[in-house]
Amino acid sequence: MFKRRHLSLWLLIPTLVTGWLVASSAPSGTLIPTAQADEMSPKQLFEVHCAACHSITLPKSQRLARHDWEWVMDDMEDYGMTWLTDEQREKIIDHLVEHYGRDAPR
Image 1 (tube, rainbow, N blue to C red):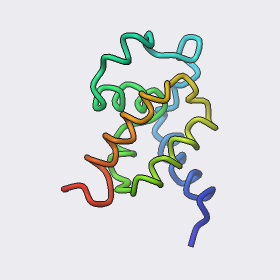
Image 2: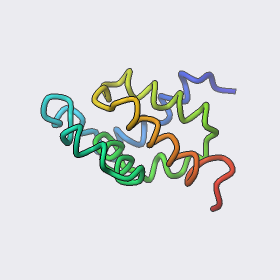
Image 3: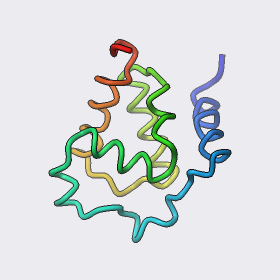
Image 4: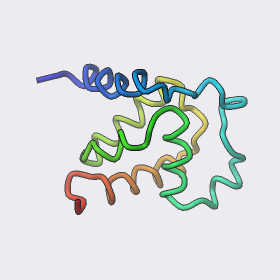
């Protein structure tokens, strides 16, 4: 079985291969003003922030439990996604669990 660190590498491979890695183009580490982002729906936050670095089909295909999505978000912060507030992060995780979690309808 792969260790969690190996999982993060496997999650990054499609990102690098498909050329969706664009985080460095985000001005000053943010995509949209925080006040505007706070008004966005969880789905919008997910689509805007996750698509900053990779295709959103990747997270949609994972079907992970909440603790795994939290770990993925921690890992994404290690890779430079540092502009989210705690509230935005929780909204994204809630959206991922509800729509793309282990128990979410397919």
